[in-house]
Image (cartoon, rainbow over all chains, first blue to last red; front, top):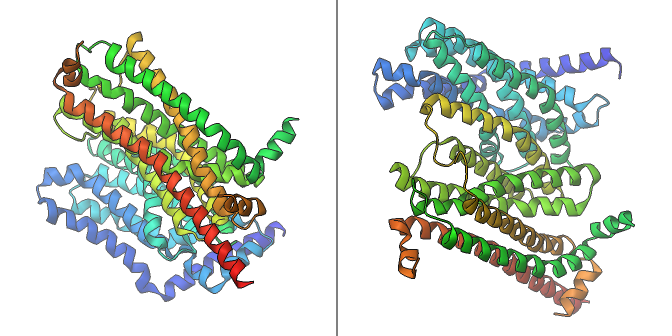
Length: 227
Length: 246
Length: 56
């Protein structure tokens, strides 16, 4: 129960998730492919007019990121739930909220980070300017952890349910709306050459808020789901 | 003495009796206020020089929107009380409120849309208020869906309490972000839903309707709560007696 | 204001009266549903009690 063993526990947790993810690399690719595919579908669907694409680009990329994150969230607690590891988390002497933070970190490394890294390519697909791509990257850097954090609460609430996946979208997407609004607006504004400090501060505020509150909500939800 | 009252109130059997006695009075008061509000709103209030008589939809739309937010607060608050102090009655009130809140949100959306048609020519506009109400409807539907998906009533109530709390924290954030988004994309048009100053002859029916809706919510939530209590306390002695005397 | 003017609502009759009608409908549904549910629950419990008594 000392600090040392807590850090060890979290490190082990993150490492385990990463190793498991590496073993099922194909599954890791799925949300990433989805992200790229969905973004690429839009020019096909609405025409390749560069002005139009530039206008919708930020929103499209961010919506695709939301959906990709949603797709990947289901796996966060499911395998642990099925083999009983989740109960072990709750029974351990470590604060569940911190263990949850470890799980969310692992999830972000596995799904959020790849999305982040591929985003400049997608920016190019939709004709974003250099400034736009730079700010897109920053919004995703700040925002994808928020997606994982908020999503974790939803997953924790639905982990024991059969049709959990469908309800998860309904629960989580409304909560993603502010992030979507601020982030896509930031990229839009940057592409127009205007300063975006206000937008980025708002996103950073969302990050801080979700970092401080969501682990507790997730832990409480896990306790309820497993009761 | 108050302590005793709250302890007794938390007992399902006592709640069932008390609420049964209260409901007719609340319903009657609500009906009177509705009639008064309708009279002052539809008959007495003058025609608006800008919107003609279509503005009278406001007497439904605005109180419905107020209720949709108010009920969500009550739901989250009752859920929190149920979660922290393990008071069953609080859980019951929380989950009973959800369908009612969703109904009011739906009503606000529909009346908002109908009101907008003669004004703006379309059945839907992405106005900040309507968009926020739409997201609120999704939040309510999420609560209802989650509750329906969990078999055990106690677990379901507790899960829904967490969800409602998460939602209530997000509502101001969502509201602010949608307003901001709206000014970005629509320009500085003042939406007709926000009347800068409201004449007293229109304010009175509005407040009467708002009060009527509140009392309506009170008696309808008690009606739903009683059903939920019966379900949960099926095997209790007092429920059996109740069934036998019917 | 006479009755026909009242119903006419300055030309907005459809919009105003549809809104009020939908409101009335929603208010009624929210009253009727708990009543029906209550009746159903009570009959369910009564039926289960009868069955239990028969089995003992």
